[in-house]
Length: 134
Image 1 (cartoon, rainbow, N blue to C red):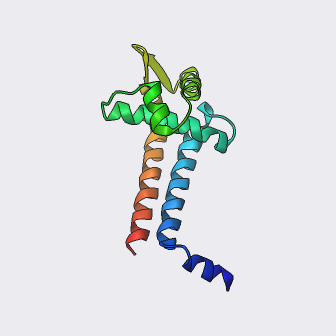
Image 2: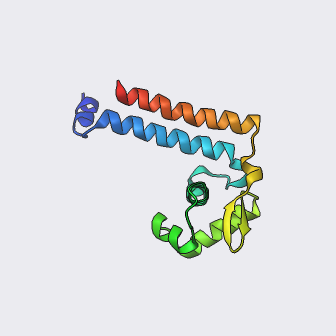
């Protein structure tokens, strides 16, 4: 029974399992929803997704954002941040507005597909929360 012993050696194993599954499920949902504007491969798209999310979150929170701030926060080289921002803009996910990047509202417009995507992400989060409470 080495499997059970290994699980017991990891503190908060059940909680870590649930949180890990929720994070991975959310990332996969985002990748699947926006795969047309990302690279073919999930792994190589993680960096681009993180940068795109950083832009969207700062915009929704009405907080300033810059290449340098994102590079520092995400611990990604500023040149890489700049390249990924350009890539997202070239694919229509972001637009450049007065020298900074913002989410393209057309990419996040109300649609049946977007509503399903948001419901799916909400369901993943709520399902994880229920499992953590059990």
